[in-house]
Structures are given as structure tokens and as C-alpha cells.
Image (cartoon, rainbow, N blue to C red):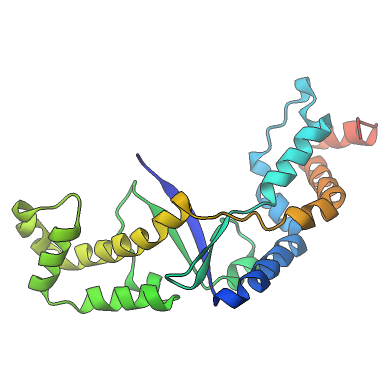
Length: 222
């Protein structure tokens, strides 16, 4: 089965988890306008079915948009946040970002892993391995290569080293998103800010579609 998951990471000690989640929550709410605007492409406007005038659908979209899955991975001492947007202030808050996927090559640049101490140690160990030792360990641990593929691995050792770094780091993270405890951090703040966020969405949708703006100004089911 294929997979793809955008994960952003914030390094922190266990005692600081709640503090960092609150920081993230506040940043998202602070940048609510930009965040909603960046996700308007996912709103399906259906005038015939009065989608725009259905308050429950609007609230559902807002709730889904402002609730994020967060895990704390003790093995790397970092929050793992399912996050993908173009909000600079929030992106800059994170220490690193990795798109975990299996649909393309996974030979990410070595510097991809420098943001986290554990990832960096894994990268350094594999990068510095002698060729013969690396090939032995790679073939032993990989699900797709065996002794018959030794020559193929030797043809591009650096490529396979980078792929091995990815696989090793992914094995640490995968159980977290598969079986780990997920947190939707903005539940309470969402309840407190629901009407404001709803109004922002409606206003931005109106700006996106002049016809909807006219309908909204004429009065809808709000």
C-alpha cells in the first residue's frame, strides 16, 4: 500500500510538550486568515445545493482545518505534526520537515536530517560507513534487495546510503503515526474562536466569488 505524509518536527523535551503545542496552536490562530486562504482550494462550492449557506458544512470545514494530528516521539524527542501549508511564520517555528512517502525515490539530501539529533546521528553513521560494511547492512535490513543485487547497490552507493538513511528514520516514525496517540490541539481554542473563524471563512469565500458575495450581502441562512 502506498503512503504519503507531510510531517513537520519541533524538537522538545517531554516536560515542554504542552507548552510547544500551545505555541503551535496560537500561531495557527494568529495566522488564521492566511491559513484559510491557503486552503480555500479545498472548498467545494455548490450553489445549486446551497453549500455556501449550510452553516453545518462551513463549521465542519473550519473544524477539520484547525484540528491537527500531533504525536510526541520520545525516541527522537520531538513533536511530529501533520502539517503542510505556506504560512512562513509557522513553517519557521518548526525545526524540520520531511515528506514521508513511497511513491518516488527516497534519496533525500543528507542535510534533510540535520534538524534533529537522533536523525543526524543516523545520517552520520550511515554516510561514514565503509562501502563493504554498508552493503552488508543494507542488504540484510532491506526488504527489496538481497545478495543477488549486490552489484546494483555497488553501482551507486551514495544513492543507496541516502535511501537507507530515509528507511532507518522512517522506521522510527512510522509506528507513531500508525499506532501512536494522536492529539488535536485546537479543540478548546476552536470552540472559543468558532464564530470568528466561521466569519473569516465566509468573508474569504465571498472575496473569492463575487456572485457569492452578492448572495451573502442579500442575506443567507446565518
